[in-house]
Length: 434
Image (tube, rainbow, N blue to C red; front, side, top):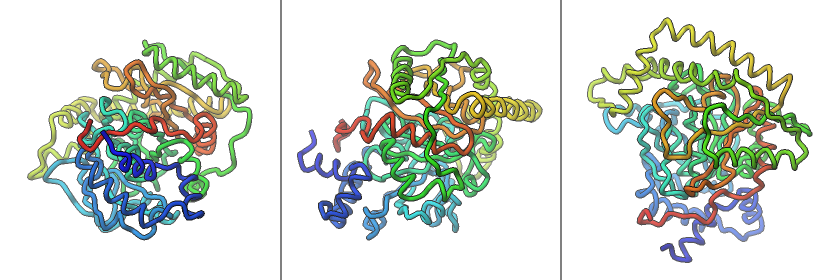
């Protein structure tokens, strides 16, 4: 059971960013007290959660916090002075002298880097090294596991995570947080160790859509990223798509809740069948596997590196794809991506769909690809957020896809739908993990 002092400290650390700025300006929040709270909070809880790859208290005491929002980076992104281990437990830990482009960009926009956070091994293994602070019974695997946990726990305000096939979105939603995958560009992947270059981009995890919108505007992220900055128009044409495969009723209810909320806000919603969208999942899954084996298969031959069985299985699965089929899959991707980008320009502005067909913790049968792969295959930005609680007390999430460069629509719609409430606010794991 948490003490009142612990609850108060965690509430201060997880305060919505707009409210925190006001508290700082009015003197209600003392910066030195905030930094001391943060050091104590990480020291108390991170040994249980395992979010950081190695917490550095001296960094957490930076004088710029909390005036400058704090940011962490997952372990497939180079940060100067921090080892890039790719989630490998031992035998691989090069320390880069220069940071990835996205790290430099975030620093230029006034965000304070406070460290690296954990990834599953090579972003391939299914065993997550970090524990969910808000829903302890729900695992949060994926490359973004440490980032999602760090944000949900109040260790940082935003985390930057690579996303090749949903590894940004799954852990974020499972922790009750919000994720925005950015439109892929070569610059954003500079210094990122990609699992699948054809599918990959980077994105942001924040505690709520309101925090994402505040960061987006207050720190001019759209301008810095070279994206459109105008607010989304109204009303939007929104396709709400239900896959033909069986979907858990609670996830369908979450999709319906999102549709109803968009309709209430005056947007025009439609429910087209979109068979070509669902046909993207299987080739996307094969492309991800094939490119992953090329990206990280060499690690099996590295002296002193012992990969986990789950990682080896994924690499071996990818090798079976072969170079000839891989070339064909890339051609299929170009055609499929062009089709969906056309739909999201000419017929619809947004595509809303479930994040997955099953509740968190329930694995899909072998060979069934993830719905998250659609955005990756079509090279699109996507917002993922929880909108309800399932019968198993786990966050039920949806994802919203837009045309390339239209993150402004995603940020605006997410904020309007969810307001400034944290999903799961008030839910805290104790220091003992219970």
